[in-house]
Length: 92
Image (tube, rainbow, N blue to C red; front, side, top):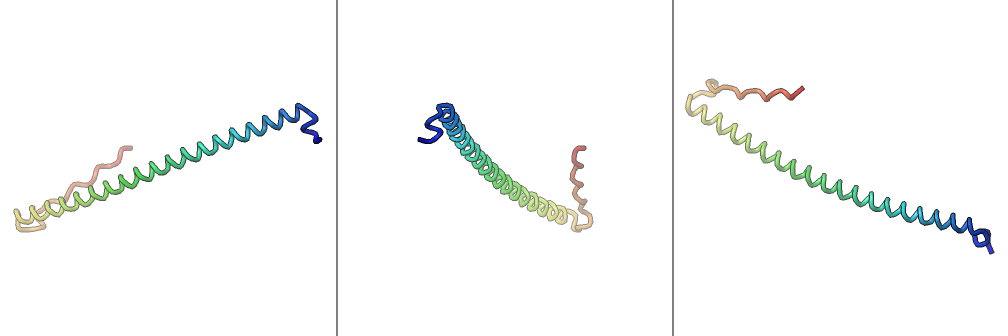
């Protein structure tokens, strides 16, 4: 017989250690799964936001071109069309 079988306190300590390792591995798997899901959700959100910003940029470009063309048609000169206002300063 080995020492673990002869000593009940060693057997109990080994079982406790095995149980703690099993629980620790379960929590690690859970944490990794949740982390993976969070990163996937974040990536999807960022992708959709990037697409939205691209569409918004295209819309603003088309509107800017249409506004310039309208101004040129009304005034007959590009020089008479006012420059668009600068973007607002970011909050401090």
